[in-house]
Image 1 (cartoon, rainbow, N blue to C red):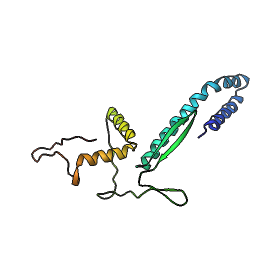
Image 2: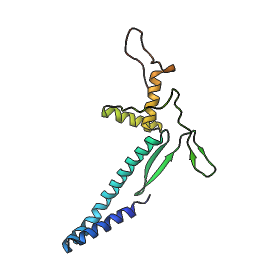
Image 3: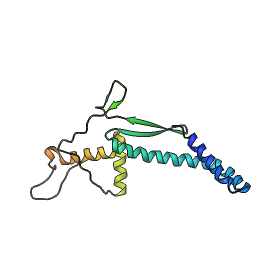
Image 4: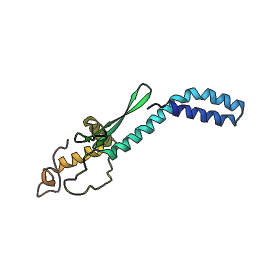
Length: 162
């Protein structure tokens, strides 16, 4: 994706706004344009990264990555392994099937350091944070939806989640 048209448009808008302020404002705008270009590109990249995160959350188990090639970002869409390609070239994702019924949404609050480690682990495995957390919860509960390591006399859980 070429960011140059967006940066150029902002440059034109700044010049137009400076025209209203007279010659001194126009000269100041011209001096500010070059140093601001890298800041504008960085801000646009940050906005694209946030958008990519939101799309990846909705696309799970597929994902979208933003890669920087030179000065321009490039989107890379990764479909799940069980996705198929139709005759017209469109990627068809398999339906989301929950083993135990419909999918439910919850809010999960994590300490910042734990959230960072979860994000890193999900990135290493090439899955979304949501998909990683679902796998971790399923692994923690073991077979049949029953927690592993639960003692009948205690109300605590033991074991490891990968």
